[in-house]
Image 1 (cartoon, rainbow, N blue to C red):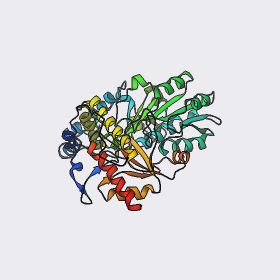
Image 2: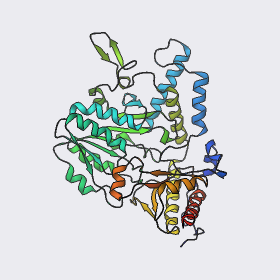
Image 3: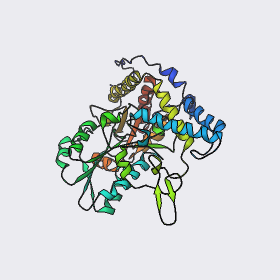
Image 4: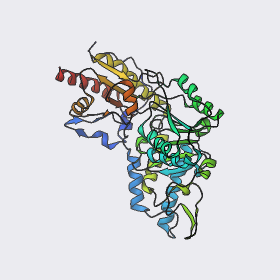
Length: 417
């Protein structure tokens, strides 16, 4: 069936997507003479006016370095900066702002944890990851394993793109020290059963880290309910600015870990004989932090909090269901990753078409998607493909945009035919 007029049987709950779109100025532009259809949200989401205004106001009215300025601007900047930390704490339902560490993003947060846990590891120890991990949750562990003699062991996945739980259970043993797993796959959209994984890991005193970069744009995690040891995410995927991310860590573990970088702010006292470290969270925040970016991230979280989150999630699910309906309208198209529980991410291939050609020709029609290996080469190897095309949806996307994507894919296919 190739008719794009297929009736839309998905009923979307009340969610005023047009009102929301007006909050995102970048969405109103044209690209290559066509209205922009932005479907690369998994790589980086767009920013609402509230975020842009908050960062502009910071620079116009309160910019100063934080914590030590003995003047009004320093006080304003510090109040905004630490207020942003409290906003993140509330978002995650963390126990204390001492457990919220600013980083440059998810990648730096994982590297920080990996280096901090290295003293716990010895030859023969094992670090469990999964076959669907982003390189950022593989490579840092490989580097630490090489230093310590530990080894990185991947949990297998099913052809549908779900964790193979039998593989997980079989790999847990007395040598397992760390479980580092993505909450949501950036390629497949799979939502992993992290509560179950953490429960079994805790029973064996295994330290747990969740990569939440792809989870937080779609739903709000609860650190008290999950009880993981570490949780990491990036601001720019969460409708905030680039250059800043968050590491949540249980205070007891953070206290035990050595600092990741040395310099200003992370010190208590310095002499040429000895340096002592600052208290949490500053122990891990060397140098001038990304102050405006922290303010921007807080504004993004406040913006999300102003929305009807259940209706937002329902709208996103409706977008994915509409996309799944339309796959059959494009001959030779198939989705990679058909997990039962997933966020609105659609990695796909079309027989006879290279992903990069698909992406280039869609861009000529004003449609932005991602192509390539998506920083998940082991996952591409599992599926036997060099890469995929990926459309990732956000709450500001519309049913019409989904249909425009598939109409454009048919044009691409006809061109190559």
